[in-house]
Every structure is written in structure tokens, then in C-alpha cells.
Length: 413
Image (tube, rainbow, N blue to C red; front, side, top):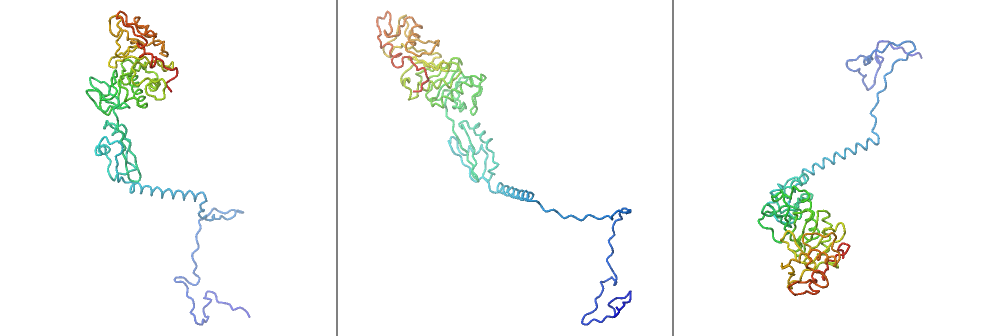
């Protein structure tokens, strides 16, 4: 059967019969042959013979992140969250809720807090510490050391270490009470009780809260070294006087009964080690007796590793003391060979021998060379025209207990 021709220009469904449904309608505004307008393309270059037509490149989509990039992104996100959390903690959590003043309470808590200028509610993390410590130490003379400690989350502690008067330094007709670190604590017209009196040192700083200063840097260094060494060896409370008038002949008195000749400023700490072993160290076999008086020569200790001791009276109030190995025991009189009492007890005088006193004989020789009218030895001391001869007991003070003998090595017991 031949196919039925459809008239052109007509709707192909026209004239057809539909059962139960209606004929579809065309979209509004479009006829039966309506189509979307064709997309216009920009004119391309003229195509020559044998040249393929131009094609537009396909559009590329976003490339997914690699494994490393994802890790970096995740790390940055975590860091950002941590930073936000930290800021919230700093500004909301670390608030000062308690301020404590501990240690040596030489000043009231109100005085300490007034200088620190702390207040409840301050941010603990950003509370300054160093400037407050310096302010306390400079404006409160009897504060040797101040330390501000933060206890998280909300406590602030101010720990005070008190300064103790260790020495009285002569200055301009008065006295400066100083600590073992050289800090000036107080001014006084008289030396502080039970403290070492320092003479021959001119301090340019005189106000409480300051530290000792001097135009002579050598003198200042010597004083600081001596104070530190005596404090470390717990000797400073037993030392009564220190003379720095001559830095080549420094003298220190122990309990006003033993004069320690330190000589120059060289090796002062080493010389004071000798003094400690000779005077205090309980393990030293040849230690100076607790009631013995005399001169302990430490001038050559650093070079010869020896020290010499001469028993005899000392004069701590004088600028130059004297002692002799052949001094007369108390109550038995003095040598009056030339008519002057005590003339022959000068033994050492102000001179230092060429070699340290290491044997009893050398001590006797030193005494003989000083005064020909004295004969120190087994025969005792001759009293001359007075007619009284002292036997061996006349030299016991200088030779029996110590004999001027100091071992070749330091006092180590």
C-alpha cells in the first residue's frame, strides 16, 4: 500500500482523530515550525583551502586538591582555631585573683604592694615583673632581693629576701651600714653593733638603697671580693676590722685577737681560704687556738702556698700592729733591756720578712734580727740589768702552741 502523502505546510496531526485525549498545543508564541534561534559565533579568520575549521577548546573544570594541599589547609585551620582559643583564654581566664607577699617580711604588705602597683583583675600573663623587682630593691633598702613569680591561672607571688648588715664603712665622719653584697642599708653616727668596721675606703655613693661605689676601682673590687669570701665562709660575723688604707698592705682582724696580713689585692679569695683553715676549720690539725693572739701573715700565700703565724699581742685599734714569737706570757712582765717597757716585743714591727714563717726557728730569727736586746730561743729572753732571767717559759707563747710553724700546704687538715 503506497504511503499516504501529507500535504506540506500543514500540521501532520491535523485531521487525525484522538480518542480520550486532546491534541497537543504548541508552545505559546511559537508556530508549528518555531525553533530556538541559532547561536551566533564570532566570525573567524577566513578559511583557506585545506585548513581545518577552528574549534573552541573545551572548558576545564576545577582540579581537586592534592594530598599535601589538603594537609596544609587542615593545619592552617587548626592553628587558626588554636589562636582564637588562646586569645579568649588570655583575656577572659588569666585574671589576677590573689596577690601574696612571702619570704622575709621586713616591710608591710601594704608598702610592698604600693610600690608594685598590682591590682586584682590584672591580666596575669602581661603583668610586668622586672621593673617591679628593681623598684622594690632600690626603694626599700633592707630588701636584698625581690622576685615576682606568676602562678597560673590567677595567683601572683612577691618573694622578699631581706638584707643583713654585714659591715660598717667609714664615710665622711659617719658610717654606712652595708650588706654582704655592698648595698647601703642605713646611715649611722656610730658603727653598727657586731659588724666589721671598714676603714680606708671612700664611697662615692652614700644613700640607702644604693650600692657602694668608689673612684678607685681596685679598692671597690677588693672590698667586694673580701665581703663575698667572708660571707661564703661564714667568717664575716667573726671579723671585726678591715683596713684598706694601703692596698699593698691590707689588714683584717679576726675577733680582735688575730691580725691577718693579706698584703696586696692579688688572690684575696685564696688567701682567705688559708685564713679559714688556720682559724676556723675544725679538721685542721695545726689550727690556731681559740684564745691565741698574734699575726697571721698571708702575704705570700698565693705564691709560696705557705703562711706564717707569730703569737703575741695585737692592737686592732692601731694602724699597724706588732707581734713577736718571743712575747712574754701575761702576768710575767716585759723586757726592759733599754729601759723602755715592751720595746723588745716588737718582733715583726711593720716589716714583712723576705720569706714566710714556716718553722719555729725562723720566727725566732725574725725576732732576733729586729731587736738585738732580745734572745728568743731555748734560753728564754734576757731581762738585762733588771736581774731577772726568764727560762723556757718566756718563749712558750711564741713557740709552744704553734711555734710560728705553718705546714707547706694550705690548711686542709
